[in-house]
Image (cartoon, rainbow, N blue to C red; front, side, top):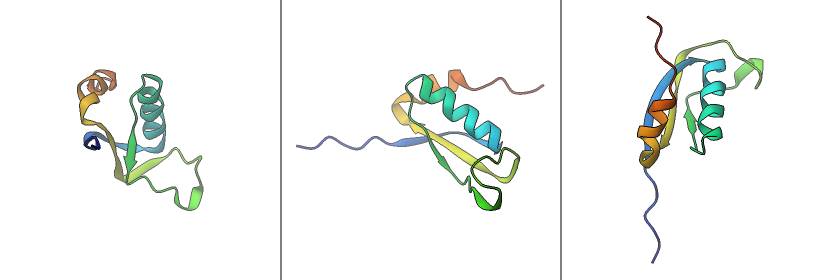
Length: 77
């Protein structure tokens, strides 16, 4: 019998290429897989770190969502 597939949950939406790369790296260093939806490489290539007008959604396995939230940077006040 096959095991049910893990559900993915939205962790956050970020608005820069740097934030996408930093958050993904942080999650993966902690052993939490991450999917990024909406981050298009586009004209400037994979090294683009500038603003993303539409944002990029960062998803993690639902079972790791609570732990992943603990790793989010504090919001600017």
